[in-house]
Length: 100
Image (cartoon, rainbow, N blue to C red; front, side, top):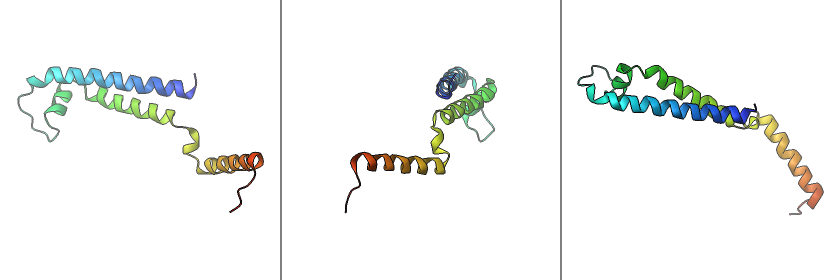
């Protein structure tokens, strides 16, 4: 499999997992009457329903998928600059240089 296919699969897996955790948290939310943490009612319901680890995993899957979808040239400035120089050289060979 190529890098983009894996990235798309991980992004969708993260989204689906987050959706499942969100739905289960919303179902459990009316049962939370009091909460003693600074998390708030939503995250307390997520913790009580056992979805906190799945929530973190869904975020990690999504971020890894997005990272895999980014082109490799973004991470190496040297590669980007050499590609720009090469395309500029090809353009100048094909159309000539512009006189200013």
